[in-house]
Amino acid sequence: MSQMDGTMTTTKSCMIKPAWTPATIGLMVLGFVVFWPLGLAMLAYILWGDRFEGMFRDAKDQWRGSPLKGAFDQMSNTTGYARTGNVAFDDYREREFKRLEEERAKLDAMRADFDDFLRELRRARDQEEFDRFMSDHGRSAGGSEAAPL
View (cartoon, rainbow, N blue to C red):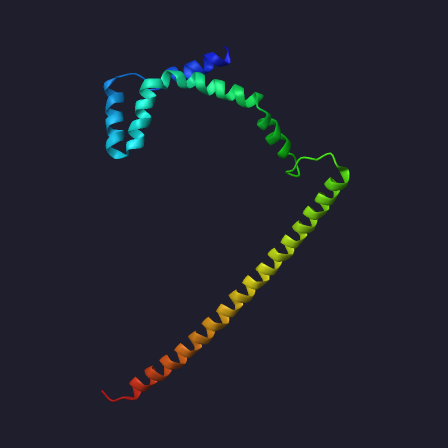
């Protein structure tokens, strides 16, 4: 079974065919009522839906032959950047990336320490407010018990 046969099977198994049927017309009208771009998309599907498969296949073939695909593939190596061919520059760039990564790790550690400090500060403030509440509540509760009924 060829690749084309597999895609044709997928297209043929769709419930809504790209044709002027009551279902497609109803969906198109509903799309225009709800949100006009949906109705427009449904109209495009009705008119050109049978050509979408071929357009998709052509676009994929063009991407495979595109020089941009090669550039994207080169950039997706382990460092994330392609080698320039200049060994001195590439070594300098790697050293700078390592240095920047170490700086980022230091900043992340400092941020974690600061977050811990703030958390402890909030806990101490909450404890102080709670102690003040308990002492005020104790005084008001003690004062009401002493009052005659």
